Figure 1 (cartoon, helix red, strand yellow):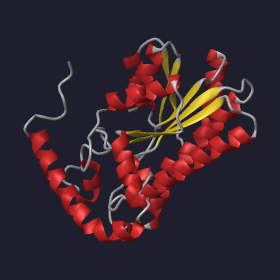
Figure 2 (spheres, rainbow, N blue to C red):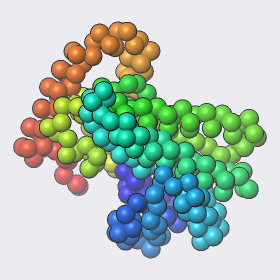
Figure 3 (cartoon, rainbow, N blue to C red):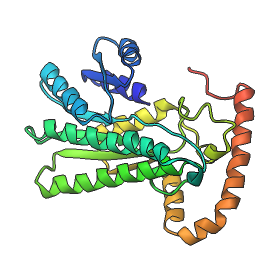
Figure 4 (tube, rainbow, N blue to C red):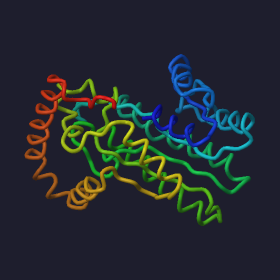
Length: 266
């Protein structure tokens, strides 16, 4: 998703800094995008490194207009069988990483009083997700921080700095496309499987019309919010929901194996 979003930004005329914890990966992505992109190695869990990256963008281009927090990791499993180090690692990357990036961007956007921070969350950030509980908890933290910070910006008179939280359904990326046989990630296959380009297109739309929370598709957002607001009902229905999710996951695997997915590029 990060690569496709970067392509969209470059297509709109932005100079784009592409980051990754692996320098070679970041460099290869920048090469794909073209002359408007350059690469930076960045560990999003490192507060000072995020600040330095934001400063380098300003030094190179004169301003920081858009910052996208997209880094994330997913480690599946039963929550009570995973060690605290597993949960901590997802919190560090998915939540603290988002916080680091958001704060670093705001620091550089404050002088001009304008800018847009786009945080890639997940539908798992809107409701508890069995099998990926640590991931879901980290995304809940990320969206709470994002929405609360957006409110604090308004309290401080910084209405020109926007924060948007993007909550897509399952997205066909390396994070989940190797989990077709993982029953703990069945919920990722229970709704609408999106391609990264589809998410990137909607993210680009936020630049023209900022929105605090964007769920993709919108009906799935309403679906998960309903279950989030009825926790007792959700707990009772979880076995049924998971059985259906597993059925859908198996069906999706057959679709992949038959060559019907992913869609062929036009």
